[in-house]
Image 1 (tube, one colour):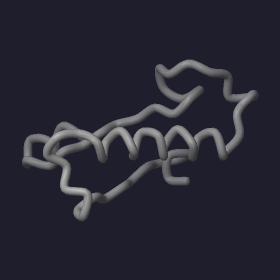
Image 2 (cartoon, one colour):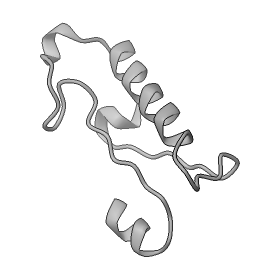
Image 3 (cartoon, rainbow, N blue to C red):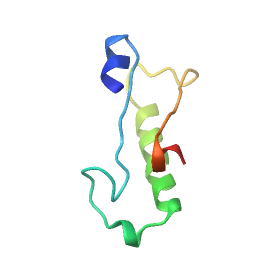
Image 4 (tube, rainbow, N blue to C red):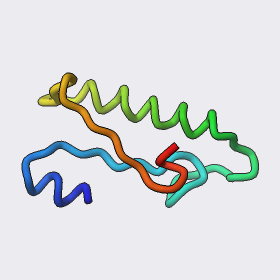
Length: 67
């Protein structure tokens, strides 16, 4: 989906929070709050990137990422 957005001129950032995808961490040692913290850190990073219109941001996720 990120590639399709980029091909349409939309900036996109994909994230694997701790213990998901190819990121580090052990799922048994994490809580939902840890995932939210990771997502907020990714969001803050995204806001600081050149060319990002902070008034026009959408967020989507699936499974745990939908949290």
